Image 1 (cartoon, rainbow, N blue to C red):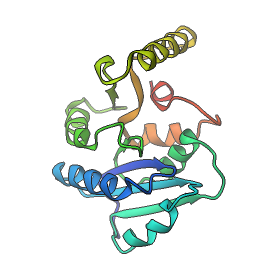
Image 2: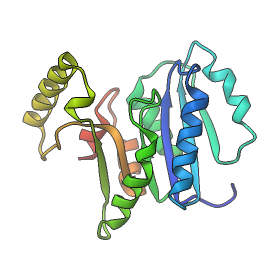
Image 3: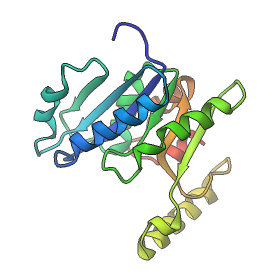
Image 4: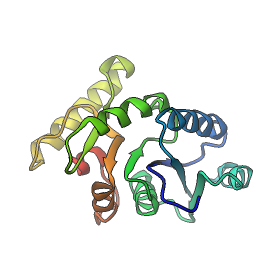
Length: 187
């Protein structure tokens, strides 16, 4: 791809070899549905399974880029590496383990594009129904603590599934933290 795409989809992955083909297929299909030119950026966070070796299988596709961290730096740092490499005016981030449905990418992009000019950000939210009760309680406690210490309001249930403009992506990529909730950082 010689020109900058309209949309970048950033996917941090670690030991996702068993689902990598499905992840790429679903993300590609969803990105195509937006009608925008796109790139998929997969950041391998030092996988110990076949994830890294599978990169060559997709290496000829100009819409797919694989980046590899030789040392496990964690999901946030892997996402930041993808954000730094993104070229799209719209950047969507989601977990590489398919807990966030790629099929929502067109809806997120449409919601993003409907916002007025200026810094734009759309969050995906996990519904309580989609989580088990123990996980729901843990997430609620975590988000309550996070919101209590935040300078700005943090929408409940947000995580790393969001659509942002390149300016916000650039800023989030530069945050000097080892680990963080991307949604809270962006909020």
